Length: 144
Image (cartoon, rainbow, N blue to C red; front, side, top):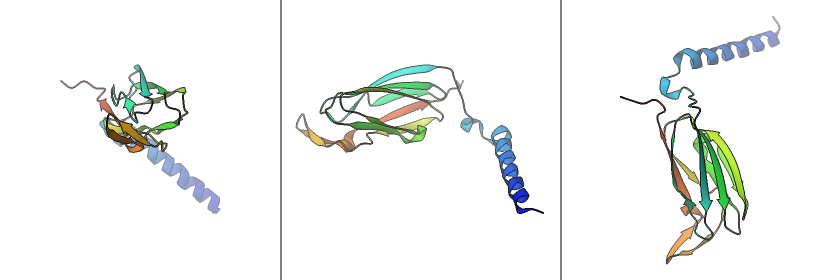
């Protein structure tokens, strides 16, 4: 038997196994949910403050989030939300928009992904590492 037929057969079996797992065995809390809800949220990187405003966002699992990101600084920032595959540079003095679907429940951090310096704000030293926030994701299914 030709080795290519064996390789193709194995690939087909793996694909069938993946489809069967997602269809019959995947736990309910891990199944993709799409609510059809669209949330538009604006996040601002205020000039020389090394923080995101707001730094807490609340959404439901399955929501589509459209983020408008405003960078008021004279230098670049970035935003990364690892749990949802988001990584975007925020050019100095510009506004950008990105979107993603919230696929899992829980609390997930977002942070500045571009080293952006440090400064003194209200007598307190703030740095790139202070640019943190979190997304709180509630269940799309109401519990009674």
